Image 1 (tube, rainbow, N blue to C red):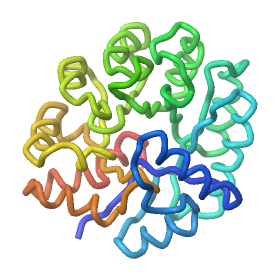
Image 2: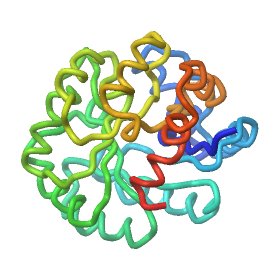
Image 3: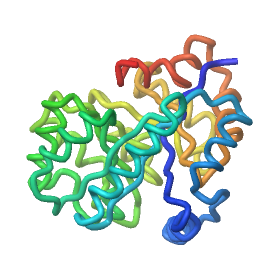
Length: 263
């Protein structure tokens, strides 16, 4: 069996986990499979042979940023053998460079942004200082990209960001664009971005998945489950079912993320 790093998982403190998961499910009109707690994530990972989980959460106000980042830091410190942490940030947060330096010093490896929850266009100049700091600190950014209901996360923003910040390492979730896969293929083809496989197989065919892996390059695809939305065991089988080579599977399941993050 392959070493598996799950590159896309959300966690929440126990007291709000169930409510937060339910809210996300309602936003996407999808029934959430799990409760969003750390204990459930670890249990599922152990059941399905996941070596490490990339954990994150999203701030919907600037005020939430430090406390959410402290939560992620504390969980990474509690489970250093299982968790890789990405911080959150918000477009209204003052002095993002200072917070990004703090989270990097604390051991977090990148940043997660969800423009549809946070309600900002990801190529907006308001984020330039943050992107510049991420680039200088070598912190990759994981974007939720693509939702046909909104323009905030449209994959067409990504080339605009890269033109201004060419050394910024960008991961586009959901094979480049949740519910806008064809648009992503057009906008992101030829750009130097990573994509993850999360929350895609419920809407795209195996042939489409293989097409996107070929388009973005097997060395640029990261396995992700989008816990608590989906069962990581099912998501693993979705990849195995594609009939890729061992070398391709090894890259997607863990090798690409390890190389990206210098693990």
